[in-house]
Length: 166
Length: 446
Image (tube, rainbow over all chains, first blue to last red; front, side, top):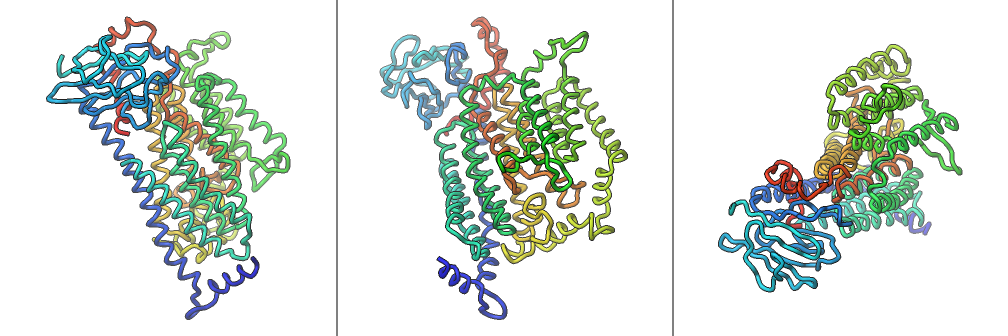
């Protein structure tokens, strides 16, 4: 160990040319690299934040369609929002990859999906364990969904609002 | 897409850590030993694991821990470069602090409602932390702010920040209820009482010569009033009071006047009182755009270059660009805090998020500006950057609270809908929903 350290010191701290040692050269090069790395790190984070903001703006533009919770929120012991915006391909489920994540144990990992086709919204059940009901009728194939329809997933009940239709 | 950037950001942090640790360990090659190498590996490992854990297990913000890890890396490299023994201890503190971050997160996340209304407890805890310094304190560098516990030196004023932030947040979260409570006689428990209570704390720190902590507390109080106080006259009154207090402090206390004099003209007493700040200015000038390179400057000449003046040391050896980067990192941290505060539906955690980020930002601004001689200098710590176990630990604990606040929590009691009739009554009132759902939309596409 001691010997290895001495060799390291000899390599890095003995004169190469005109009072310059290897350490000075390495440190002088690395100082530029450090600034670049940290600056790039800041840029990466700002990009991630930018993605977030853009998504928020885009969803507000599509604010005409959303689902609104009908249940009282305090009857659940998991967090759930009053309103979720719905767009083409919006998925709902327990898994983190969904557009709408609700940590309800009665939901499947991927529970249901909204599809927008030719200006109409359809609701599709993604083979969930407990099923999806639309106005109390089980959804077994993509079903058209209209303003003020009631969607039931487990104990959760949402009202679908499409203000373009109102 | 976001996952891709997250991996990139972790990669950049780890790359920075590996390169700079190698360089700085090489610089102090005589000091090198096995435990030290283990600490270095531990830093990289903990960075990687903490970011991954936050991303995987917590539904909240994953930027906070990323930014903080980067800030800490920059700081610890500089500390180790100036004083290897302290750098080694700082690495050990980091491991403890990260663990406590997760412990605090779990503790608060388990029962978020429990912490909402313990206002009096928080206040008494702050007072208690002050009292033990006064009783058992050791004088250290002009300020009596250390106590010794089981052979470990602790700075209680650093920990006092935690209950203080909780205290102000708890007050404003329950302000409506408190304004109806009658204390005794005709005195109501309103915002004026809060102000008086806070001024007692600020005054105590002032007497203890911890000007920096007093100023940070004042910052937090002003920010809370600015954001939540319905009676705007109290805010303006407080601003006026702060100005009057500062002027009175200037004429009444010698140590305040000395600081102002050093600030206005450090050069006339360059050998004694002006020594710190002039050395710091020399270091800033020496650095240039890219600095001298780690190990090639002389930040050892700056008094307290590893703690209060670490910003000057960073600029000297890593350059003005790195200085700008450090400020940018603080700016992003503050921005995230405000964002979290705005989308949080629980009043208490919303206030807490804002005040924690104001606390971090205030400490940063006071030290950055102080070191550059833009404002009179008061010695406080920069969170995550300066040397000190107490500071690091309390900052990570506050970060844990901020992490909880970034998650979806149920709103406080009075916000809950009471009966189903409301649903239909609110039907036309879309302004209210837009507020909530604007933030809900962020979930889309994650």
